[in-house]
Structure formats: C-alpha cells, structure tokens
Image (cartoon, rainbow, N blue to C red; front, side):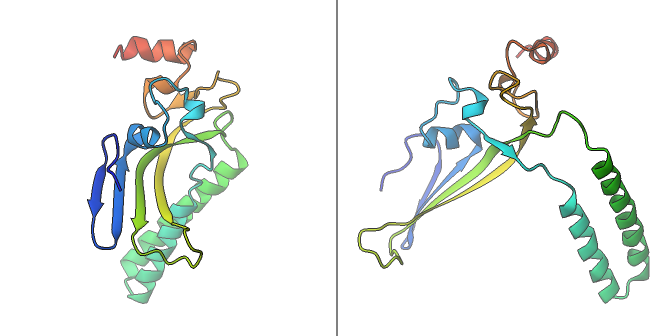
Length: 176
C-alpha cells in the first residue's frame, strides 16, 4: 500500500494501514475532487439534518439523573430549572421555526480510512476498507436557488455565490 498523494497522516502497524485526513481539502483531494475548481454543490454534504437541540436536552436529562442518583439537591434544582427553560425554548422554536434556513450543508472535518491486513470476510478476494467521516455544520441555503452555492456560510466566503449581494457585502468587509 502506498501513502496518500497529498497531505495526510499515514500509520502502518501489524494489523493494517490507517490514513487520516483533516479538513475539506484533504478529503476532497482523496476523492479526486479539485476543491479550487468545484462549486460547493458538488463538494459538500447536503441537505443535512440541522441540530435540533435534542442532544442538549438528552445531556441535561442525563446530568439530572446522575444528580438524583448521587442525592445532590443543589445540582438537581439547578439542572431541573435549566432543563425546564430549555424545553420551553425548544417548544417555542417548534411552533415558530425559522424561515429560509431549512436547507443545511456539512463540511468535512476528519476522515479516517482503515485497511486491515487480515480480512475477516469469507468471500475470497473480497477486501474491506473502512471509511469514517466526521462532519460539521458549514452553512445553509438551497443550491437550486443560489447558483450551486450556499446562501450563508460559517466557512469560507468561497462557498457563497460570487454574483450575490451577500458575497459583495462580505467581500467589502473582508477583502481577503
């Protein structure tokens, strides 16, 4: 097995090979996509489910259970109050969802590719390659309405349509 042709961490041990790529550019190059010449519609994951807040609710619920198990009354009171406030906020958001930001995009944070030397598959000549990809929220906006770009981005200004007013405004603020 050869190393990546671009920047990535490579590790070999007795079990197999592991390649680790960080960020959009490394992962896209590994996929054979030139990030400089490709519109975001062909580079990133979309549409994705945006964080609804259920994870924070679960975290608070678990912390409250732990406080109850440990009989920590001050923590129970604080966590119960925090959970009640958060649940009220979630209910309010569900009744009045934000308009226009319901199409979300994800960028690539990390990719780990693993090849095991000793394959466990029974079929002869069948090899298994494991690919784990971690993503993050990159932006929002329907590419069909934005010329293949995002309407708003937490990432680079390059993910916005160069012909849009939002791009012109950001370019005036950040000329780089």
